[in-house]
Length: 358
Image 1 (cartoon, one colour):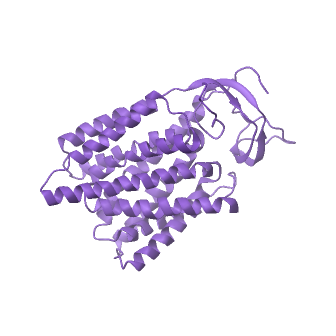
Image 2 (tube, one colour):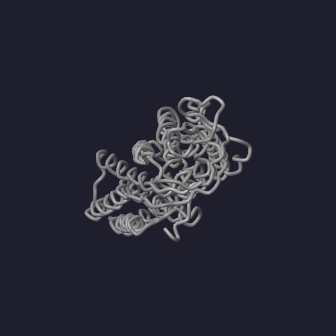
Image 3 (cartoon, rainbow, N blue to C red):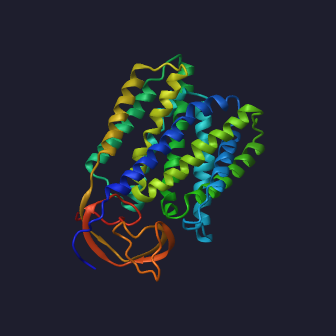
């Protein structure tokens, strides 16, 4: 149906999604220098296996009956994102951290936002205006400066650049994970974390054993499991919740705060900061600020849609009928009738519309 502009306050969900993404970013950001220290002289896949074993535990312990359940049709996608984000990407990060500084690696992880932005545009046609595109270019430029900033002898420089290349590869793996996981954001994020992390941990463990990698013992092993529970499991749970209301590109943009947290922790632990690394951090900060202050509002069309996710009936988009109206958030398959209205919004579950004529 067509009618007057909706009266709902779009800033509420967007603010909640931004806060979820920021907390997720902080949870993950502190892990990079910690993984570098706890995983010292440990195999890359062995490190990944322990990190995602901890993440799987958080997923299992925090599942909710109010959320849409993980169904059989979701399993193939969960397996794909588990391979990318639960095994290959963390292994590439661990390999890279063994060959470069924690601060530089943390800043290089900003490329995840750039890659996710491009993939969200290509795969889901999420709106990317000039402001967002310029912000992404600043993040990319900062990544280049981090590579140029590597100092030391020729052999050390080559090893460091190779390490940063591996971190960039991890960023791309996680970006693919982010983009492909967007359809999963409608269901229980804890169930997705449990499924993804379990598959990723088992796969990484098998590869570590096949390759004869060394596993840590004692406190190092326990530390990696704890870091995985908070920095990977809890962080991913919050990330998926943010992605539900912000979309893939903007969640990644807010999550770009994570590398600065990691770099700050690395500097606090005594790592030196080169002059170009400081400049790179400032440029990337400007890029994140541009993302966070973006506004987007116009008249748009909601096509008929049927899906299942946790929702409320006071958000301006859910007006279907119940025999007895549930209080608060609940989940069930439901239908949205066509609607035309105008309000501030982000590319969430209900705003995947085209912008060719906006």
